[in-house]
Structure formats: C-alpha cells, structure tokens
Length: 360
Image (tube, rainbow, N blue to C red):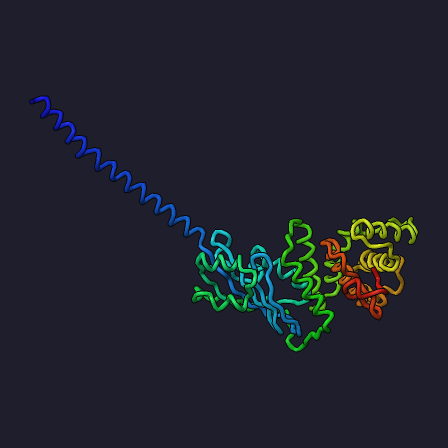
C-alpha cells in the first residue's frame, strides 16, 4: 500500500512539472513559427510604383508591357507601373532620376523606348507608391490582356507621393514630332517584339544606354559628344577604331564587308562601308571632343576651336552615325527584316520587303 502511494506521488510530480513544460515548449514553437511567417511576409511585401515622365511630344500612342513594367505612351508623356518587392528596392530610396534608372528594368525600358521610337523622357517625374496584395500581384503578372489604363484604377490608396524637378528640362514643349503611318507601324512592331525579349548580354545593355545618351546629347546640341556615344557602338561591332595607313580604301572596304556578312547577314555593301570609313576619318582626324590643340597635319584650313564644324556636311554625318548604330544594334538582336534606307541623302529604318532600293 505504501509502495503504491509513493508511485502515485512520483506520477503526480511528473505530470505537474513536465506536462506544463511541454505545453510551454509547444507554445514557443507556435510563436516562433508565427514570427517567422510574419517576418517572411514583411520581407516579401510587394509594391507597385507609378511614374509619369514628360516626353517629347508626338502623335504616337501605345500601351504595352516590358519585363516587370506596364506602360502607356501618350502625346506628351510616358507612364509606367513597376512591380517590385521591398527586398529588391525600398520605395523610400527612390529620388533623383539617376536612382530611378538604376531600378532593374526601368533604365533598360527607357533605352528600348528611345531606340524603338526616338522618344525622349524628361528627368522630371511625378508618381505614387502602392502596397499590393497577392491577388493584385498575381493579376499584374498573369493577365496578358492587362494594360496600364485598366490596372491603374484597381490599385489601393497610395502610400506616398514621389516627384522630382530637374534643371535643365530635357523636353522642348514647343516642338512636336508628327510621324507618318509607316513610321508608327514600325514603332509598334519594335515595342511589341521587345515585350518578349530577354536581355542576357550586359554589353548590349551598355550599348543601348550609349544610344539613348547619344540621342539626348544631340537634342541638347552637344553634337560632338553625341557623335562619340554613337561611335562607341560602331567601334564595338566593327571591332576596330582605325585602319593601317598602308592599306588601300578597297582593302578597308573588303574588311568592313566581311564584318557586315559575318555579324549582320548583310550582303557586301560598298556604300555603307564608305560611310563608315568617313565616320572613322571624322573621329580620328577631326578632333571630335578631343583637345583642340592636337595637330593634324593632313587637314588644311583647320579651326582649332570648332574644328568639327569645318568638315563638309558634318551634321549630316551625325545623322548617318545615329541611324547606322541603331541599325547595327537591331540587326544584332535578330531584327533581320529591317533595313537602312537612303531617302534623299538621309537614312531611316524600314521593313525590308517594302523597299527595293535600299542601302543594306
């Protein structure tokens, strides 16, 4: 009897001490899991950033998608919706235009926009930041029929307002670009193709940025600096900055023609090769954005301060190099149905099947 009593006491003691401890342990585990899930939710909070940029004014309207961006182009503005997680980019860190461009995908979109349409965006912007739930995030990614205009009204009240005013403004609001139907068709085609394009080559991303900078510098009137940005693209694809002085023009043209065939699938084109040789001549012998005290013995009547303006038709060559560098990028990206057309002395891009007399 006494032995049973002691056994009963031991069991009671075990229950009174260890059972509560097990309960506490389970409670702590539950709290830990809840905290863990809570942290996970906080680190994966999703936002949508809305930005509106002033743009060069024209008659081209378009709504599309590029990577994590929905965008709309209207007469005088470009609007974007960009989805991101807080772990990717904090909304509080967004400020100057340079920071906007660093957001993954946004800078590339602005580059693609310029390359496809020559639309320039101002450094000024106005925008809002929205916190979104899983359903909105899912719709943003999976609804292929979605566009910026249909999605924007679905967003909840904004968290904060964002804006930036830059000086000088890039956009000249007194000028307007009126595009013909063929040009608008080309713009739409390029933007629709780029919706599905996956950029894996970082060098091409750099070249796209050089092209947009060249366009902006030309717009501001910095033609020499603009020329240099476009020239970097020519230099990259041709693989050279100059030729040996001992080489004949025919030998140089043959080398460039081999590049055209190998890299772009272009048949031998003497006219295009000659223009590139003239562009190299300007770059190397006309002090483009170089020190103006450099001696160049083979040029007469040289102006030490504004030497580039002495060259015949120098601004026409700036147009040449802009369109050729653009054409090279697009051909490299497998737009093989586009050609560079010589139209009254100037170049423009168009669909190959429309033209019989073309440059390349």
